[in-house]
Length: 264
Image (cartoon, rainbow, N blue to C red; front, side):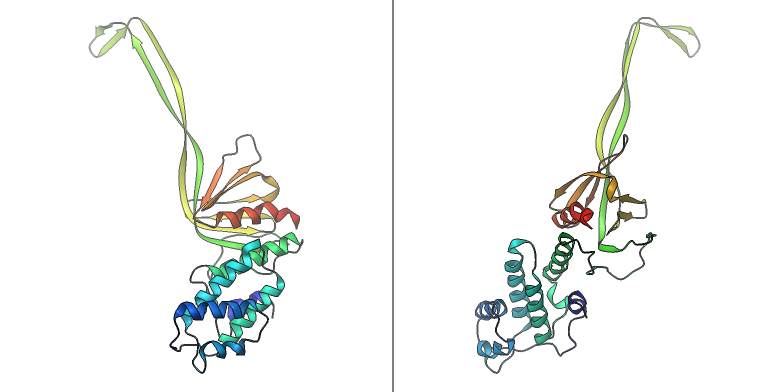
């Protein structure tokens, strides 16, 4: 079983649910140090004696360790293996450890590392449900974002004009205006919200589907991408191509993933 599948399924061991008399901070700091070391996890008994470690302390220790592991943005194979040992020893799974998104960050880091190494990622983060995309031969999903908001740059046109002179009645309900008339078309750009839906990143394209709109953007048609903390702005090749905005997702991860996908 590969690393990500182990993380996804976790261990079926009984959950740890005990109490002890030490402060939570003391336990978290000692457990964090144990995870960062190469020591056997059986040595956790030196932290709490015969008591067992409560789930909150395990979660907080895990969050701290992942922050430290990802200080260089990429999780090493050795760090992954240590995480697997930790999860298996304490009987933890994804639901236990993704309280603050730390578990998701593991999968993201693994995907980026594989891409940078020229490997097609085997760690795919997909929530349950039917995907409304028709993939082509040799295409595989690398990552899936749910509840993504989609906006487009849109041009609004209006007509502004005016006239000078005097209106003269020539018949009932009919007037002629003497003088001059000047007018012009005014264009204004604004960001139009289209809908909220699913965004899938494959090894060949970006797919998006909502109740309002479904489309795909081949990676070789992307000429630019701009990251934001909560989304990305994508620029496609084409004379009339509009800037496309995808928000309510991890913008830095999406940017790194899309920017490097052509390494595959």
